[in-house]
Length: 198
Image (tube, rainbow, N blue to C red; front, side, top):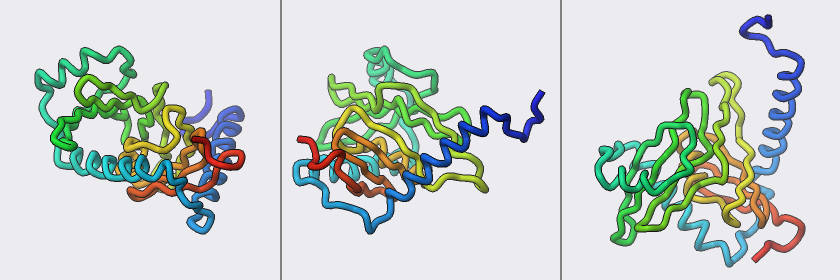
């Protein structure tokens, strides 16, 4: 039996690999290495920054009660993860937008996915899979989390929201390249394999 506060050999390898990825990701987030955001993605990035900040602020103010509209929206989703979900409602351009935010089981965890954005009949999931990551302890906390994002060419409002909520940087790899999300801002770091994809 392994004592509670020690790391076994196989766990050590996993921790080492995770630390290495975080160190590499942190090195990528150096502001001096930032590139210009490709013009075709500027609007998507600015919208994600604005919506992510608004979502973060709305959650701080408190979530709406689990009313009939929330229940109806939940009824249209069959891909919930094994997390509890907190509803947060925003108004964008006169339209109600409901977010269902997956909640971590522990304060030291961050749920990367899956969250949902519901606008009218449109339901968008934040990720393809369910994923919660440990943020360590206050004394041993990573400076950034490295994730891949397969659903869009740019980071989304969910990435901005998570970075603000957990006060941590996210290094996001997409089909276009590598991005840094920190303190409500999205920075383009590097194109993947040359020119950004369209």
